[in-house]
Image 1 (cartoon, rainbow, N blue to C red):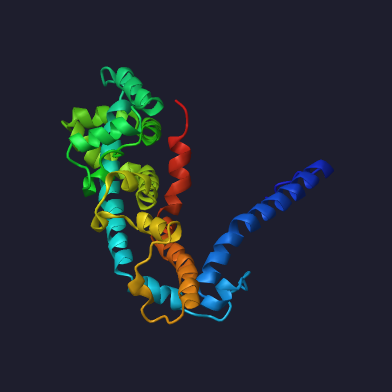
Image 2: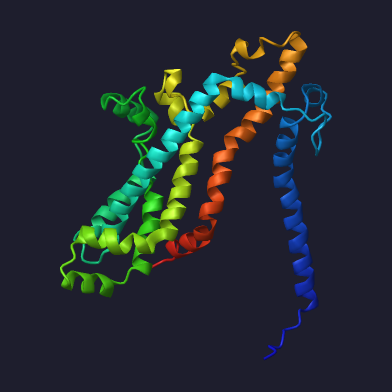
Length: 298
């Protein structure tokens, strides 16, 4: 059966053309810096310093990546960031589900009061100095826990997850399970979690990206370089130009050192972006569904 197509008016066609034009410009604006960074990372030091790189690599070279992989501190930061991302995300998702599920239940006594407390902490906080003193008194200063516990749960993510549970898990399903003798924890483990793949994937992506890009907490709470995440090491190299001289032992002239230092910045940005780019395709199919359902109002 052929469905008749509504013919676009002249105004609709003009609107579509303007939309495509604006979106194309935005695509170029957002995409060009990424292409430039990748192209620069695969170019020679002379080409990068001379500003010859515009779109494609010039004098293809892997010098920058060789320097990156030879820098031991970068590997340490990589390992720390992976640890914070994996362990921290597991803690985040666990706490978020344990908080969101009871708040989604109509038979949970006092849920509005607890929801108010959650919202209050999202709108008002003690500030930087009280948070620092709290972390210090808890004995987490200059430890790995300082990167995971202070921000172990996002109230915004709890609200989204709570809404998802209310929209997806019907009360009749819980009542039927309760009549069969199913406990709350068993119901959460055997019924709720298997049905919550999309929202768990979305929350995992949110938390994982947050941990991977974590910088400020590391700057405040960490002192030993053995605990530094990759982002803090990147800051030391890209912003403060603090690079181990051993990286340039094979470089003869000062100009070559300056060029390699500039090339190193682009290579580091590419290397630091790889984990997030690898994770995203696996959760993309759940991303839109989880966000849209979790964002619906009651």
